Amino acid sequence: MASEVEIDLYEILEIERTATPDQIKKAYRKAALKYHPDKVPEEQREESEAKFKEASRAYEILSDEDKRHLYDTHGMAAFDGRGGPGGPEVDLNDILSQMFGFNMGGPGGPGGPGPMRPRKGPDEEQEYKVTLEELYKGKTVKFSANKQVVCGTCKGSGGKEKAKPASCERCRGQGMVEAIRQIGPGMMRRETVLCDHCTGSGKVYKEKDRCKKCKGKRTTQEKKVLEIYIPRGSMQGERIVLEGEADQYPDQIPGDIVFTLVEEPHDVFNRLGNDLSAELTVSLSEALTGFNRVVLKHLDGRGIQINRPRGKILRPGDCIKVPGEGMPLKRGDARGDLYLMVKVEFPEDGWLKDDSAYEALAKMLPPPLPAVEASEEVDDVEYEDDADIEEMGADQGDPRFANEWEDDDEHEGQTQCATQ
Image 1 (cartoon, one colour):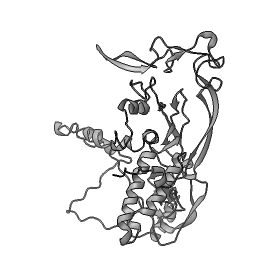
Image 2: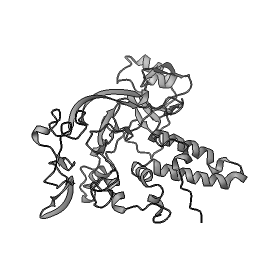
Image 3: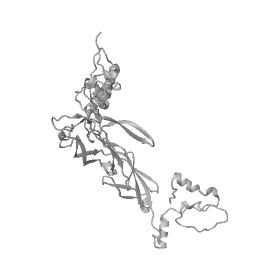
Image 4: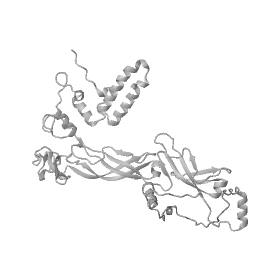
């Protein structure tokens, strides 16, 4: 019986074995578009579906660092459970030690044959505050950072050239030690952690044999200029990742620096998705007779001019939509919309100086509303200006109403009264 032909995941995606993660991703996208069942004629659908699944399986393994290393070391036997005759034997301890970097004992561990898969170091996460202007236009930021790097003189060994280390007595050459950590009052937990004496290498050098640059610590500090690019149209909470730029540790793949965008409040604009809103303040004269002027300075410095013709009255609370003047989308030239909330600015008391002016204005304005029908008795009452609606109910003697407004304010926010 003929043996089964071993699948070559690199051939499926048509890439070299040295392909970078970006090259793997691009190759998968190309294959997915080429073999997607919905993109081919009916008679080719079954064959394309099989190839599409093969490409997806290849990408699933090769895009994951740990799975890719297992595949490069053991082939598909590390994933389909084959062993014995017809396939290589895979030791579980070997797989675990290569995936997680721990000495599990047995073949493949630090004491046995076979390469040891380095672990990935920790990521560094931090918030990055951006203004709405910067999100509108996009931004490139350069900054200097003090970074821990593997010592270039000793290549991370901690010792001089040709110096021979001794096994660390504290961890007995394992690189890991057991420690007791308190997790609560009277509660302790045993954990396995990196040995702080040998920094996880399992080896130590005598003082005279230590590297002069890093003093045996295996790492040094250096200043490096980093650059992040914030695409236009980015949103609150998006993550900007600098791959492999976190602090370096010996025998580990460097982690990433991850910036989470935090959008700062803006004095003029509010943002919802790709749309913007702002307040449009007009005078009473403009609200009644129209206007043609620049009403707003946009986030990129442009003036936004509105031409409101005569005869179209603006009222407090009206909303004007300006298509295409919202936030830019990341791809293409499309933009969201701008919504302008109308606020009418009324004149101050006594702005007209004589009776004739009031009479002339009254003739131009629409006639007054008719009186409300009432009984024969009519009271001419006194009134107060600038009343506070929050005082309503405050002097009620009935205890049923004593806390009614307070409870509403607590749960629903303050009630506001707007003059129309």
